[in-house]
Image 1 (tube, one colour):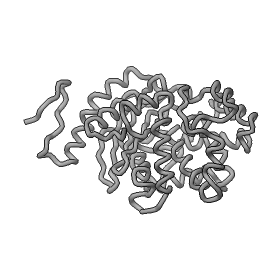
Image 2: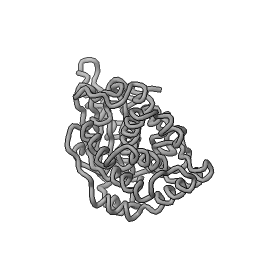
Image 3: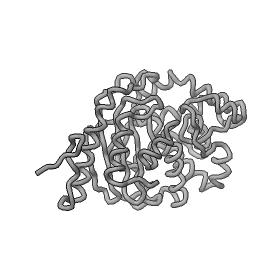
Length: 329
C-alpha cells in the first residue's frame, strides 16, 4: 500500500525498497512540487533565440560515479548550456595554467573568488574594483578566463567542446541560432570587456574574447549529458568512466568551492542555504550540481527567477537534497 505525505505526494519507500527505487521516488516527488513554480518564472528573452524555449520543459538527471542513472522528465532534450559553460572554461584554464606556470599567477591575479552580490552582468562593481571581476562564474570573470585560454589554446573553442565531449562521453553540437543571436545581443558583455580592457585586464581584442565566450554558451547538451559531465568534480578530478585525470584533487575541490559560493549569481547564498551543493546555473534553465564522492546532477526548466536561475530547478534541487540528505554544508 502506498503512503502519502501531508502535501499529497507519495512517500519515499521505506527500508524494503532498493536505493534506486527510493531515489526514483524522490525525483517524482521533487518534480511534483517544483513544476508548478515554473508558471511564476519568465523564459530568458534578452537573447532572442532563447525566447522560444518551451516553458513546460522539465528534467532531472542524477548520474552516480559508477554510471547508474536516475532520470525524470525530458532528460534527453538538448538546450544551450549558457553560463554552465563557465565551469568547464575555468577547468580548461586551470589545466593550461597549471601546466605552464601557475594558476595563481595566470588566473587569480586577474579574477577574484568572492561572491558578487550583484547581477551576473553588472558593470558597477567592475568599475569600482578597477576591472578585476569578483569571480569566474559571472560574465566578466568568464571573459577574463577566455582571454587566458586564448594565450594557451590554438583553438580555444574546439578545446572547450572537446573537453565537454570527453566528460559527456558523446559528440556534442553548437546551436548556431543561439550563437548568431547572442553575437548580435552582446552589447552589455562587450561593454564589460571594453571596461576591463581599459584597466589592462584583457590581453586580446574584445572581438577575440567574445567569440569563444558566445560559442561556449551555445553548446547544446541535455540534462543527462550535463549530469554525467560534472561527475569528475565529485570524483577528485578524475573522469569516472575513462579514469582520466581532468584536474588535481586540490583544483577540483576549489572549482566546487567556487560553484558553491558563486555559481548561482546573486542568489548563491540562498542556494548554499537551501540546497547545500556546489551548483552552476545558466539562463536557458539548466542547473548542474555536484555531490562529492557520489554523483553529478542536472535539473532543467526554462522559466527563471529574478536572479536568472531556474525557478522550478532550484525547488527541485532543494527537495532532492533534503529528502536524500545530500547537502555538504
